[in-house]
Length: 286
Image (cartoon, rainbow, N blue to C red; front, side, top):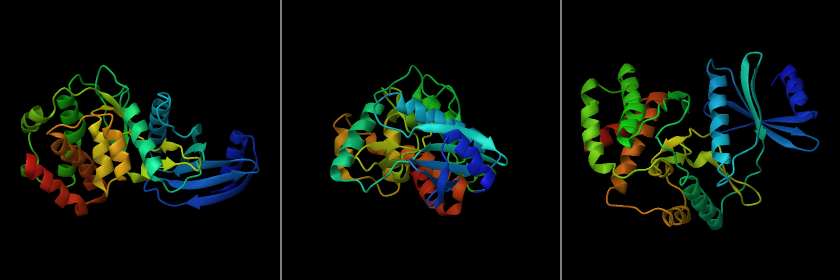
C-alpha cells in the first residue's frame, strides 16, 4: 500500500494509521488490517475495471442484511476509488473459532434473516457472484428466476468458454419442466447468496457476522445448499436452522440443483477441475 493511500484513509478515519498488515484468504481483492492508536479496520483493495461496482454491490448487500436486525454485518466506513484502485473500508471484527453454541446462534439468526420476504424474487439491482456479474431482474415465480437469472447465464458462459458443449446444456423448456415438480409453494427470502465457510465470522464476543454477500430474494434453501457444497457447517448449525424450516421429500434434490449454480460459477471462474461435479448434476436431472 502506498503512502498516498495511507494519508487518504487517515483523512477518512480522522485518525493516524500506525500499522498496515496484509491479510490472506481473498481470491478477488487484496485485504489489509489497518491499525490506529485506538481502533482496527479492514480494507479491501482491487484494481480491476469493475472493482468499484463490486464493492458498491457488496455494501448494498451488507446494509440490506444488517437493516433486518437478524444477524450482524460489519459497519462500512467508506467505499470509493483512489488513484488506480477501488477500496472498501470497514470495521475489523476480531474473530475466533466457533463453538457449538456459536453454530447454533448462526443457524437461528440465518433462519430469522430468511424470514424477511418480498413480493418478487430477485433484487432492485444486480450484483456479483465472486467476480462474475449476477443478474437479479425481479421475477414473480421462482422457476422463472432460477432458470433465466441463475442457470442460463452460467450455462451460456460455460459454452462460450468451451467448458461445456451445447449438447450438455439443457434447453430452457427442459430446465423449467424439471424444476416444475421440485419448486412448489416457494416464497422469496432474503439470502446472503454466497454462504460458504469463508463468508461468516464469529467475533471474540460470540456474535455471528455475515460478510461478502451476493444478496437477493430467493428460496431459503439456496443458502443452505452453498453451506453444504465444500464440506458443510457444524451439525449444530443445521439443527438450529432446521428448527425454523420444514424439509420435504424434494429438499435434497433442490439442494443439488442449487449447488449446480455455484458449481457452474466455479467452473467459469476456475476452470475444468469443476467439470465433473457440474456434469454429474446435469446428467442426473436434465
